[in-house]
Length: 368
Image (cartoon, rainbow, N blue to C red; front, side, top):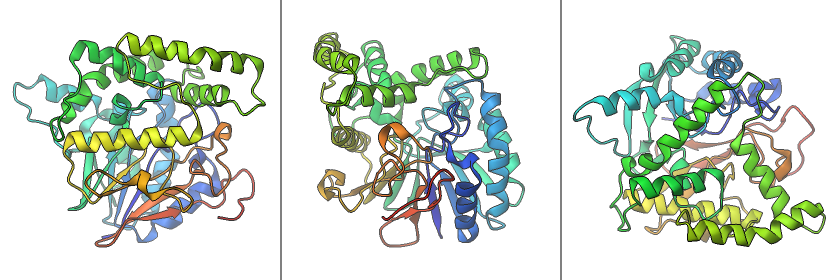
């Protein structure tokens, strides 16, 4: 079986960064699907933080239809929800919670596309030639390959992102994660994160279409402003000087621990450390763990392989993204934030990282 994993398409973004709305990247993806048996959309398929759900679905419809028409007859599409499109599974999770004994989520719980009205609409657009299901919080692609969006790392990351701080506040209410390896469940992570997602979804759906609410964009903008390379504006330098004081306050309030170190390398390392922590706490016994969420593809040839190792000796692989974010140098082929990547998993051997879209539909791509 040939499985293609892509994540973080963020279709419906209010800024023109979701590249699958451009003809060239969409054509490249559709061409790559010709010999694929299973397509895994590993979270943040839709951008539901920028406005009402129906707006994002309207943007997604022609893209999903093109994907469905390009997949071989009898192939499978699996949707794994992320933090920006949690509405794909939240109605189903709410129904499960209403049962007296719904059973644990575990590392993979599969449900029909009727998990939510949005997922059902997507399944309809894919067409009857394709079998569509929803999975949460992750999926076993092989006995030794587990994939998940990766948003659970927001409970552990030391970068002071919006969701990390709010999740830290929620942890004071619902309790902290266990310390021992294998001692946590998906429900332990959900306890602090699900209320945050529900709140953000409520805000987004309460705003008029075209609103500018975007926590992900705010994080990228803040990183650019605070990382400082000698050319940062005066306000950025002032904020950077004050940042350690704010971080100290966050940690004293018990919302951390978070760090005042903010750089491209630190973002990558912190994300990997947090993801390794998630895998360890959940007791995931896999040789390969594929995730997205951070938009930082890897490991790339210039990176330290040790950063991508799990405590059990396994390998982490980030599937990258499909959003063109100019603030973090996402157009160069050597950039881990360059969009248009994916991961191919076959019946044996290591998962293969792919550059699927050479042409981003914006400017010529150059050298790998």
